[in-house]
Amino acid sequence: MALTIDASASAVCSISGSTVSFSGVGTCVIDANQAGNTNYLAAPEVQQSFAVGKASLDHLVLSSATASIAGGASQTYAAEGFDVHGNDLGAVTATTTFSISPDGFCTGASCTATVPGAHTVNGTSAGKTGSAALHVSVAPLITSANHATFTVGSSGTFTVTTIGSPTAALSAAGTLPSGVTFIDNGDGTATLAGTPTAGTAATYPLTLTAANGVTPDASQGFTLTVLPLTFTLSGTFSAGGVAQAGGLVSVFNAATTVFIGTATADGSGTYSLANLPTGSYKLYLTPSS
Image 1 (tube, rainbow, N blue to C red):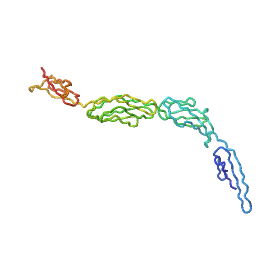
Image 2 (image 1 turned 135 degrees about the vertical axis):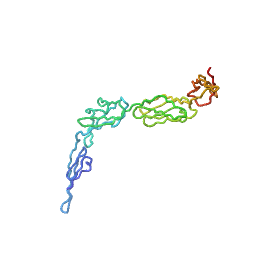
Image 3 (image 1 turned 180 degrees about the vertical axis):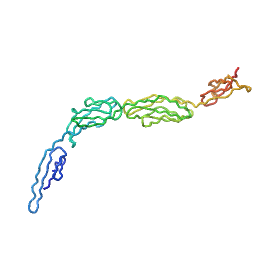
């Protein structure tokens, strides 16, 4: 005799030899067939049916399975019960206790957290559990200084830093001096770097923006100051071979005749005037009395 599962019950049960296994809810129908031979005709098919119900609660499924909230906001969950075969036993939210880690708290089915990053929400009902992933996002904030100073002809660098979750993208609006670039490093920082070229000494106002999808974006007014290339003018003031201690050296711009400053010779007649922009100058010497 051949025992088989009726096609109408293939989702409910299966058979191996004389052992029947149940995998779903519904009616399991077993067909018994006796083949004929030279002495007997084939017997009529005989069926036997079994009503198969749902198994007991095995696990919970929380929805939403993944979610993202801003720090301090809340996410509300629903819990559905399932048996070991995946049969839906219905909503069990009312009997489920919710918790969240690594920080935060749940009130009923609503969970809240403030620390940015990945969190896990767990639900427990009748000793059975389910979990969901919750990401807590925090609006970005620019934490670095709002100014930097470079010098013409010298390499300079400044790092813009931020906090927030997810990692913020950084951009700069405004005009940069030739030779200087602004690069978003993709890790919540950006680098302002380069060597300002000749003739770029000036003040450059910029607006830095950090955005990570959580409002509001962070905005910072930033000032890049490029100083001119400078040098120290120095020498020895003497008259008739005699060092002019206390002699006065007056410095003027050779092209514009604008007065720049003065230097007083020391006991050996040596004078110096620091931080002069590169250029041509005229010196007027006034001997000591």
